[in-house]
Image (cartoon, one colour):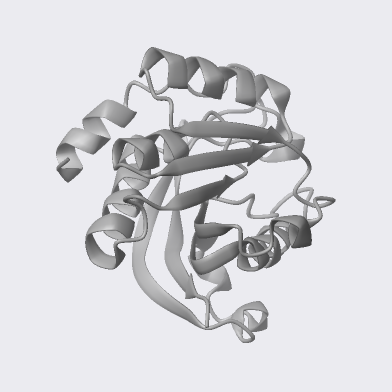
Length: 204
């Protein structure tokens, strides 16, 4: 599947009906999701035939995209039952069967129970900006425990020099422009561009 074809398909994925600010629920755009997944597969061969976990999967755009790129199985983890119901509906509408769902709180999940169970972990974690400082690092620690081969994640470019990454071996894949649409009442602008880094963390 070509990049433009993948993005076109992902544009049909339904997103949050009533996003929850405390969970930092913002949809991953079809463009960013397609770019991430296409790069993961075409450059690193980390999706096709692989067991993939999608942490904080939301409505499932990354999982569904991974399934379209022939993941062996993609398991989405999320705390929100409403988001998972939309995910399930999306999977049914696309007639995708190689996805599964786990409802859980990533902050209290025993990641050791899933230690090295997945070939690849993909995620667009909460950035931990307003109510959840450090949330992205909690997701990353869980991901690094769960992955056998690699973790792919988005993080705000403004945190690139932050010491929180110093203990992990990672590859800077690309810088992306995250077009954040107005989703909540306190948003004054129709959309805001946020620069994000697309990073690959390789397991030894």
